[in-house]
Image 1 (cartoon, rainbow, N blue to C red):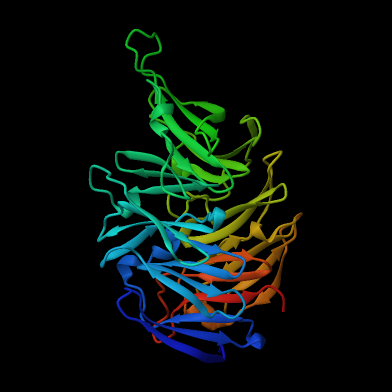
Image 2: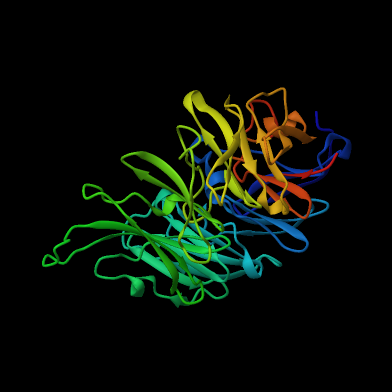
Amino acid sequence: MIVLLVMAVLVLSGAGFGAWYMLVGSASNNVLWSVASKQQGEDVDAALGAKTRGTWFTDRAVVQTLPNGVKAYDLDSGKQLWATALPGDSSEACVAPENSSGDIGIVAYGEGRACDHLVAYDLGTGKQLWDKDLKPGGTTSKDEVSVARAGDVVVVNAAKVTLALKATDGTTAWDPKKFATQDCGAGEFTGGKALIRVRGCQISDFDDPDWGQNWDEVSLVDPATGQARWTYHHKVPKDSFGEIEGRDVVSTSPVVLIRHGDDGEVLFSLDDETGKVRSQFSPAVPSEYVRTDDSLGGPWSEAGALGDTFVIDVTGEKSKELLAAYDLDSGKQLWKTDAVEFRSFYPLPAAGGDRILAYKTTNDNDKGPELVEFDAKDGSTKTVVEYPEDVHKGMSIWARPYWHEGRLYVSEPNPSAVYGETPYTLVALPTTD
């Protein structure tokens, strides 16, 4: 069990956050500090941790997007530095991109099931920088909104609205619709290290002999101007409306996508510089289901590149998960782990270097999560750090790990814990024993 020392008990009245407790863990138990929540998350909002993704870092703080606002904690001690509520009395966060360039955090929010506003925060002070009504012109649910962030630009897709805004002041950076053509729309965007646009196209000129022909386009877009630096064209069968969508961008750098054709799903990579096919993965997919639980607009947290090796966590029959590794140049599968029920791996490319590190979780209540390392050649595994079972019991499968300067910060904005256990919204963990 984690030996916890209660450092502070605070109630943020009127801020919409509810009560919270900040606790510091014992180093001997491989916990640096933790933030416990007095209330468990509602079942209807249990996926908020995965959907939101807004956990950011400055030189002194980790900043977390919560259902009703944002909070900053000291990196070393876990002491709360500031807290800012979302605008409005009953607003809820729905999407927050992981990128926080310029120490600016972006959160999409709305009331009830809506997601129709965007707000920006100074991550150093918690000050609200700007707030924008997206005016989607129709009902916009949380599952229909994507927010892609690359550098200083935020591209939002909400119902009939597609906007490219400057993160610094919320003004227009460029108009995505100006890059639409007679045959191709504005497209869907995915951010991260680069900005990728995916759009389906169809020849609409009745006089064209190829009228009705469909194809998909994948473009690397300059965040500053909206111009495509390169475009990959993918032909699709005549009876198909497209095989690649915005949600199929697994990684933006390196560019890795999944397409859905009549012959099944296929993972492939494009050259970052030219947009030409770098490799087709073989086998095409490592397991039956290749999907993400993350919000639209960002790369998948279940995948990542470590050197020239690309790793991805996938699910097979009976909820059995495995991690597979591919060579990005050849597309050849290097290895894959055994498939185990309800076990998940979250690759940690932010650790840097060529070490293949991942955060491992299971549904075993008698065992905590682990930091594990895989051998690049054969996938053999060794445990680097084993964390207390309380971390597992106090967080659900929606919790996400973030590597920052040699530490792990596991975030779950709306925690759901094992019955009778303390739920945690944030836990700081060491990466060495």
